[in-house]
Image 1 (cartoon, rainbow, N blue to C red):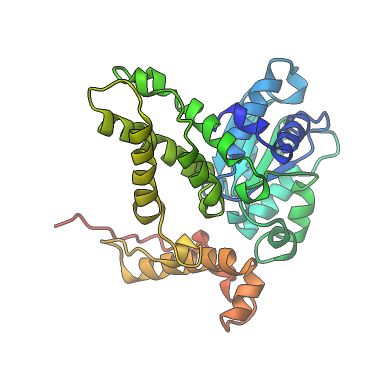
Image 2: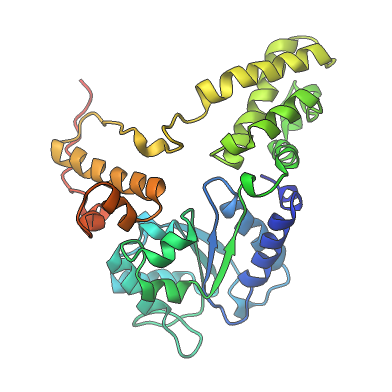
Length: 336
């Protein structure tokens, strides 16, 4: 997704402009950026940061931007202090905040408590902390098996929600922005195929299937790459584009995309299929399965509480279905 994508619709423009302001808020209040998978949260933060960074002073803590996965986030007080100090006068983005354990949430709550504008537990420093999540905001706010209430209150001082394709009627503009981002003109020997397709068959396909692009901009990335490579396949040595071949390319994409290249899922949930990894012990596989069940249940039912009720589980059963409790054995063996 390129910066042009933020000009595609009113809601996205508003979200992006709000992001630029909130990201540089002088109080360094915590910010959480929400939006379903593929709505471009990561890229939007990068673009907003780049636009405001050139005019920012040191005290705004915008000297550098770094994304940190929740699965790699520290689990001890000293480690959090070290992380904060390492990013003094910088901005860190904790991605997929819902995957933080209760212990991590508690430590972060302590680390983000401040009376003088600095953060840390035993050591204090200046920095800015941003969070992201693909979960529905109601699930994050209400399901205490997901995020603790005190922690949500601390990190949600500022909230931005990026719209999905179903929220705005701009998939065609988004596709062209994605095409531009790919910079196909830099592909040596195939520069003549780099111009964005402008045929009505493609536009109709995009409009008719917008609700099915569950991967968001990732699906548009795939479609753009497919279109460009089908041009290489069909035109061969011919460099002049033709309407008949362009229509054939759209037909090929229709045939391939949903049946082959898009992640298969049941009921719109790709987590409904569990992949058994060779070489793991039964203990490891059981733990992996429980972790996936938790993720599937959240996406399927919205909250852990609703999922436990629907699945006939007691309240709190899924509380420990998390990576923290994944066995350390991981007895992987070399393939024979």
